[in-house]
Image (cartoon, rainbow, N blue to C red):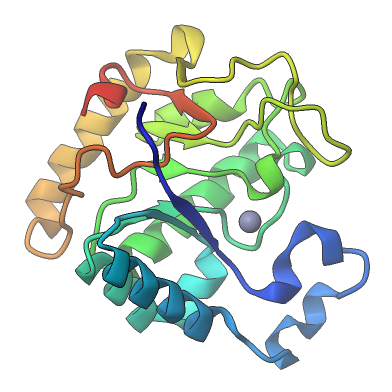
Length: 217
Ligand SMILES: [Zn+2]
């Protein structure tokens, strides 16, 4: 059995449960705890000598670039968790593509590492978003940890496979995009962007394999 550990890097006022209680406009005036709490996790993981995947909001990466570097420098994986924790099923496909692209660039620029995985805020990829994994494949993502295979009042798809699985006919198309992106990075950002080295470091829960062979990496 393969065990993987993952963390959502977001602040207390950004979680879906508060979306009707705490307005987006008030975020910047709230006490931010994400940096010190994530640093505490980094210390704990270091002591236990374990590596994790940190799915991070673009909002957090923009404000705490030093934290992004510390996550990468400690040998963990940075993943994308969207810009502002908006649920995917509330986006149009074009809005989702823009959010996915913008947040990835912010996380990669601040962390200095390639982002290859995505976790939808509040696991908001389901049967109503059949376009989501295709857009991820077009943008070169390797895997998605976005579908919770359970019945839940906020999210989930109880019919989804309970283990890692392929995103159907998208397999292969993502590989092309990924190759293009990785070539492009090698040419323009090779010195700055580092691929994640750790095999078995990716979040394995709710994994959907977008690119061919991604799970064997
Ligand atoms: Zn989250």
